[in-house]
Structures are given as C-alpha cells and as structure tokens.
Image 1: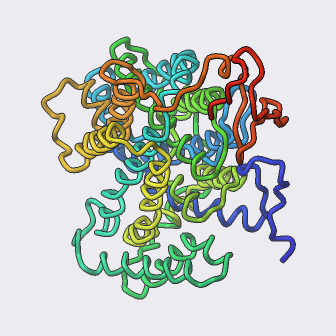
Image 2: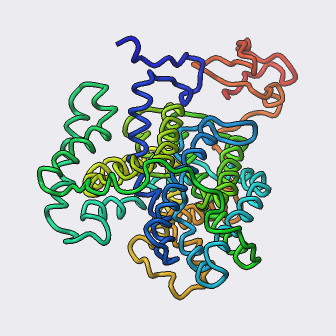
Length: 493
C-alpha cells in the first residue's frame, strides 16, 4: 500500500502531488471518459456541416484527440511562458462551432476555417498579456458566480445524455433514464463505501459498472470497434492548405475572446478547488498555451483549443489535484488519436451511463461556486451582482433562440452561458464595487487623536489587546501619556 501513497512534499503546490503510476493512469482515464463526448462533438458537427464522409470525419476526430492530448501536456506540464501547470484538460472548444459553420458556408470551406483558426490563435498569443491584467476584476463575487454558472451550464448536457443523447432512437425513453439512474446509484454507493480508493475512482468505476449493466439491458453496441484502421498518424493539412480571409479571421477573434473568458474562468475554478495560487502571470501562461495549441491545431486538421469545464468538476468530486494525473489523461488522448480502435471502444460507452455520472460530476462544479460565493461580502450590492449575472447567464440554457435576431457577433459572445455570466459579473462588479459614485464611504463612529495616529506606523495591529508593529514586535503601551498632550489619559483606540 505504501507504493500507492502520494509523494507530495509539504512544501510543494497542491497540483504538484505525485501518485503511483497505476493510480495516475486510472485517474487520468477518468478524465478522458469525462470529456470524451465533448471533445469529439465539434469535429462531428463540423464534419457533418461540411458534408464529409465517414473516413474524413474519422480524420477530424482522430486529429482532435491527438492535438487535445498534446495541448493538455502543454497546459499541465508547461514550458517557459506557456502552460498554467494546473490540472486542466484541453480539447477542441465548442464555443466557436457556430462561427466556423458560418465561415464554412460563406468564406471558402474547411480550408478557410483552418486559416481563420490558425491566424486568430497567433494573434491571440500577442493579446494575452493585456487580457491577463484584468485578473483584479475577478474577486470572489465574480469567480463564485462564474464557477456556479459553469456547473449550471453543464446540467443540460448531462440531462441530454441521460435521455440517450441527441439523435438516439427512442430518445427520452425510460430505459435510458433508468440506466442513468442506476449509474448514479452505483456512483453514490462507491462514494459512501468508506474506502478512499473506491471513492476517488467512483466516476471511472461507476461508468465501467454502468456499461456492464447496459450490456445486460441490451443497450451496448461494440460491433464497430474493429472496423477501420488500428493505427493512424494525423496527416498535416489533410484537407489542403489553409486559406486566410480577413472577415473570417475577425469573426474567429470574437471566438478567441470567448475562449479567453471561459479558460480564465476554468483556471480560477480549478485553483479555488485545489487551493492553488493563481496570479496574472499564471493566467497569461495558461492562455498562451491555449492560443499556441489553437495555432498548431489547424495544421493537424482540428480547431480552437480550450480548457474543459466538466473536468474541473471531476477534480472537485474526486479530490485528486495532481496535474500529472491530468497529463496522463493527455497521454491517453494522444494514444486514442494514434489508435482509432481504442477511441472506438471509448465511444461505444452508452451515453446514458455518462449522463448518470454527470449529475454528480457537473453538480459539484456548481457547489464549488456556491462555496466561493460564501467568501464574498454579504451585502445588497453583491446580491444584485450574483442574481443578475446568474439570470443573464441562464438565458442561453433556458431559451437557446434568444439571440437569433441579434447580429452574429452578439450571438457568438452571449450564446455561451459562461461568457454571458462572466461579462455581466465583471461589469456589475466594476459598477457597484469599483466605482465610487453613488456610494458613501463608511466611517467608524470611533475617534482617535492626531498625535496618537502619528505614533502609528504601517503594519501596526492589535491582537488580543496587545499592539504589535509591522515586524511582529510588541509595542509597549504606557498607561498615561506624558508627551505633547500633557498629563491627560490616553483615550482608548
């Protein structure tokens, strides 16, 4: 058992914890299962919009897995100026799909999409330092709101999975919902088992056991696992060289700003969950990793990369904070990209099984946001910020067609619940908490003499009735003041 213990030293960061190789791979595989459906969705949608055949769509899927794994390596392990070194899984972002479909139909096909993605990613690297300086505008009232909406925005996803997944035969059938419920019960039982190893692997084990239950229910189909190539390396520019069009690049720059916002929110969320320290420099390194990955992605036939919110939930529910675990998940993604047969095995896991696990998984993200909100000052100003931002961020979830009549660029930004809530929370925090107009500065009813104030220095503090200076040395207090104020008693501070 000693080999399975973590080897993190007390002086290291929480995310630097190292586990045994077996546990690292097992927990890493949990991350892959958690985000697999999300990472392959954009290439499937784009391939369908482009009218690609099965083989071409297979190239898109394999490429997104391969690049997602490499991007995860960069984000978790890091190199100078690139990578936040936080447990964040990277993958193809869904936030740009609508914009990319518009480019696909109007500006030159898939080659124009890849050209716009490549150029916007390169420009995005240059803009990162300016965006990272906005970190001061993310106090607990903002970060808590954003983390909460991240979890809430994933609820429709897990509900869709529990109903069989969009396009499934008998979508919404009770057999699908029953399978999701069984998976959820298995997860809860493993978490309640009292065995730490089972609790930490509860997501993975519940998915495996849920799949076995699905087999008995006749809801699994592994017949296509052996169809197709066993090994394939993504071919650079498999669909031709990129085409660069100014209009398409400008459109994708809006997507980049959305990606900035979502990845920043994910970094703040995972830092809050793990207890890691995140400053503007670390945010900048994380965003640069996003942008570098997004610049390289089109070379290997895939799209803009960003952090995955659902994996933030996995960190919260398992308590496994190690970035090396997530790096192992990145390695598995690379292997899946090189070995399509393994990808087909994972893709054969019944969607309702993922839906059952997702209830706890995504709910834990929202719970982490509520915990962060508890750190914000309890006043009416912050209550208005939270209420308005959550409601504004919920609009795309409860009314997806709300922005249909707006200009395309408005829909691109605000169709994302995360972006909507983040923008509103930041703006309202600036208006209510940063700007001074409309607010009266609170003044304590207590008073102090000028000569007493002059005797104080920066860093002085009172602890347990004793006065200490900025260096922690106790300051001697004289009962009677015999200085410039004569023999009068020293009024209490």
